[in-house]
Each structure stands twice: as C-alpha cells, then as structure tokens.
Length: 448
Ligand code: UGA
Image (cartoon, rainbow, N blue to C red; front, side, top):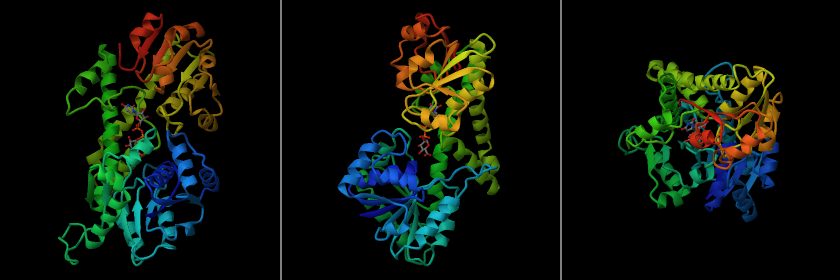
C-alpha cells in the first residue's frame, strides 16, 4: 500500500520505517528540513535500537522516502498523523497546533476515499473535531493511537500488544446498527487491517471502536502506568519511615497475577516525553469536561513522582556527609530511561541539575544522552568515560539503570576510582549485597 506519515519525530520516523519494512511504500513528511535531510540520508535523528538499520534498508529498497513537501503524499491512500502534542506553555493542556496544521496541510492533497489515521496522543474529542474539519473532502478520519515504548519502538510498532482503531459510528441511517461502525467506518477499519496485515495475521487483538474510546484508551493506558509507578513510589515513602524494603514488597505483591510486577520499579520516578505531559493533559481535559474529580488522583500521582527526585537529592546530600558543596558527585545516567538518548523531563538530569544548584561539582555520564543533555544543561560537566566520571567522586548516584551500571560496573573497580565509597541507587538497580560486600555504603530508594 502507499502510505504517508506526517510528522517524523519519534513516533512518525519509527512508524514510517517500520511500515516500509513490512512492505508498504511510505513517504515521511516533516516541516523540519534538517530532520528530513538526516532521515533521507539514512541517519536516525535519535537513538533507537534497530531504527538505523530499518531506515537504511527502507531507503535502499526505494520503498521509504522523505520530504518536506506535503505534495509528496499525493498518491498515498492512508495518511498517518504522528506530530507532537506537547504540554502548552503556561498550562497543563495539550497543544494541538501541530495536529491541526498537519490535518490542514493534508486537506490540500486529499482525494475521496483516502484515510487519515491520527496517531498522536490527543485530548478526547479531538478526532470528532478533526472529522468535521475534513468534512466534504471525501476522506475518512480514524484514530489509531500508538503505544510504543522508547527503546522498543521498532518492535512495538511491528509487533504491538494490540491495535486500536476509532472509526466513525453509525447513526442508523446507513443501514448499520446505531452506534456500530458506519459503512464508512467499517471500510476504514478494513483498510487499517490491511496496513497492519502481518500483526493481524499473528492474532494481535484488533479493537474497532468509536473515536472517544480510542482516544481515551491511549491516555488511560499511560495514566494507569504512571499511577502504578507512583503507587510503588508511595510505598517507598512509607517503607523509608518504617525501615521496610520496597523492592521486596514489589516482588511479593507482584506475584499476584492481578497486580503483576512490571512497572513496580520504585526509584526516582517517571519522566520522558509522554507520561508526565499525558497525565497533566488528561487532568486538564477532565476539568474541561466538568469531571476533574474523576482523575483528581493524577495530581497526586504527579506530586508523588516529583517528590522522589527531592528524596534522591536529599539522600545524596546525606550520603556526602550533609553537604555536597564543592564536592565531586558522579551522576550515572542522563536519559529518562535506558536504551534511549531522550532527556525530555528526565528525572536523572533533574537530580543532576539540583545537585549542581547545591554547589556540587557534578559530572554526568551516560552511554547515549550526553549530547542532548549538554545542549539543554550546558552548566553541567559531562564525561562519556565512566571511569573519568567516577574518579575522585565523593558520592556516586545512579539515576538511569543502564546495563553499563547495573550489570557491567564492578563495585570493586568503582571503589578503586572514587574518593568515598558511597553510592545512592536512584533506580534500585544495583545488587546492594554485592556493593556492600565490596565496601560501599549503599543507599536505595525505599530500602533500609
Ligand atoms: C510510555 C508508555 O510506556 C508507552 O506505552 C507509550 O506509548 C509512550 O509512553 C507514549 O505515550 O508514547 P515511554 O515514555 O517510552 O513509554 O517510557 P516507559 O517505558 O513507559 O517509562 C516511562 C518512565 O517511567 C521512565 O522514566 C522510567 O524510568 C519510569 N519507570 C518505568 C519507573 O520509574 N518505574 C518502572 O517500574 C517503570
């Protein structure tokens, strides 16, 4: 099939490359000339395992092209919209400027029968509004939210857990049952089944629903994940008071299949370009709908999350003997999570910046995110060399659980480099027993 993908950021670039890899002819479109030039020359603009290979493969096959000109989308029959929906400046709601602009630009080239498939994370009600906007073009709008995780984006796109498609529903006038997909909606769902044929063939759940449900599924999923993380971090706060160990607590409750152990990793909390902004936008939208109280707990989820950064900073200060002023602190990690160079709302960098603000000589290291971190926070010192970062440190703080720190860093070797064998494990990712046995004073999050 011939597809276009409007917006070549994280979501769009991965989607375009992944769709080409399963056999479609895809053109990726973005207004950012630099990004398009990079993608067109086979260079992934961000660190994402497998993306680089997929890009090169797609470009060489001729199935994948990139352009800054929306006219390049002429001839495609399905147009994905994957532009960003950042948090509004000065507010919590989502900024829909880019989504609206993408749809408006598509309006100039749409032909009857085309499909616009929105993938961006949007406040509930957006799809209905956009459907009105394209009314008269003969094209159909569907909402097809994306659930990919950074670091696993290619795999999540090609082999998703589930596919969700919000389609126009019938008012009964076209012969379809009232509330069921309209004839137009059912056709649109069939087209998307064809787009995702390999995943559909392996039995991936394919949920066809209305616009509002599809939009809500996305924000509900992220709100649930954020809540799960903040729940365990709240338990960490209690554990800290009573001397309990939140990691054992998580293991023990996680054995209950109804609860599950995943996303019960207590530490410095969630960050990134999605969870923080999505829960805020959800709460803002609920307020607009007069149902702010229904998701009032998300404010608490946000607050618990941010408190964990304070806690990590306080632990480092305590670990350094009450003050970090003019002391070298090695900060291991800058990315908001491992396998990513993304530093958007990174708890790791936030901790580094706060320690710097307290007068510490912070040296940040990270296997992938140093360049991005340096751009946003030039005031910090960076070293790509882990040993260099550790050398002479008065305290070490692990804030992103890269394998380089979790598995490969031997506590004995690290001990030989630092000035003081004190480690704060902001991600509860080190083996406390091994580190203590090697002479380290170990501080975890929510652990004795
Ligand atoms: C998240 C969702 O997991 C995806 O399903 C969704 O598609 C995506 O947002 C999005 O909306 O685009 P992502 O932001 O890539 O994906 O990252 P996650 O793996 O969810 O991690 C988010 C944050 O939570 C990270 O900072 C991570 O360190 C933290 N986290 C995760 C914890 O603190 N504890 C955990 O147990 C798990």
